[in-house]
Amino acid sequence: MPARLKPLIRHGPTRRKKASGPLTDSRRRLLRAMDLLEANLGQPQWDGPKDALEILVLTILSQNTNDRNALAAYQNLVRKFPAGPARPDSLPRNAEGQLDKVKLRLSDAARAVAPPRWEDVASLPADELARVIRVAGLPGSKAASILALLHWLQERGGYRLEEQIGKLGIEQAMAEMTRIKGIGIKTAAVTLIEAMGADLCPVDTHVHRIINRLGIVQTKADRDRTFAMLREMIPAGRAYALHHNLLTFGRTICLARAPQCDKCPLAKLCPSCGKA
Ligand code: SF4
Image (tube, rainbow, N blue to C red; front, side, top):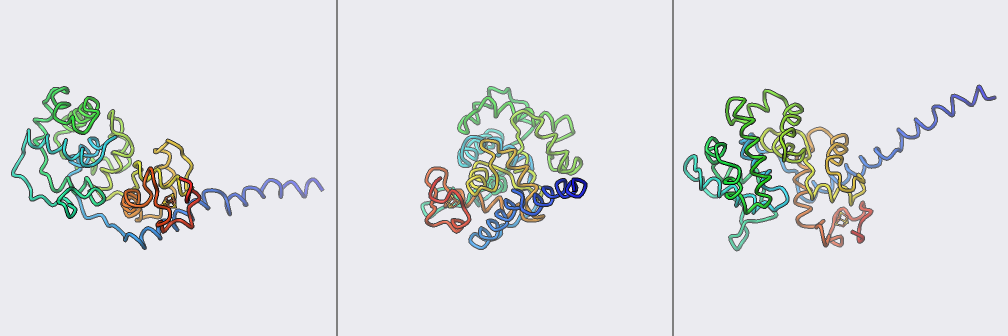
């Protein structure tokens, strides 16, 4: 009798875990949420290569502040060191002519605003750069990160970050960029998806909050873990649309302080409905 029972005891739990374990449930919920978001908000598509250094610097500037402040700091930099004629203003605006904070994406800003002369920025003392970008907050640490990034590129022969990424490949580029103090996984991933079309879903404050509220992950304050877990679950080719839809959804419905659960198309799916 014991000899007959042993194999059943050893194999049973493993099979059950594969069939109905938490990863399977989370992935199913994620796929349903992705479908609902795409049905309500569309399927945003990557619109082609962009200047990776512009996007990375804008993303560093946006840490712990909103995109409008990041853009204002970047424009200060461009005004101080203009590299060429101003570009026509194609930034999204609302009926009052103000920047549209729901539609604004820093990748669009990188197209709409010409870059500064990077060699001049790289030669600035850190405290002077900090003064120029002060409007974005944390000026000392952001200036140090931008200078470290520019010096890293200088050592590699120029300011064409996309060329370096092309040589290194996505995984190695992510590893190299995140070695620079102040460039975390989210910042590197935003650069890689917007400039290069990498199939990643960067986890910013909106993505992290919504994915946790939906019970797809339970990662508390650990955004990098959310990123790693999502990466395992998102089907190939759908990460870009998910990232942008979650940004829009987080700015309009699943707000940080007062989520609009009564208007939410994901409500039936969401364990936090009415409780967040
Ligand atoms: S039901 Fe509420 S908490 Fe859940 S995703 Fe929708 S808005 Fe967010």
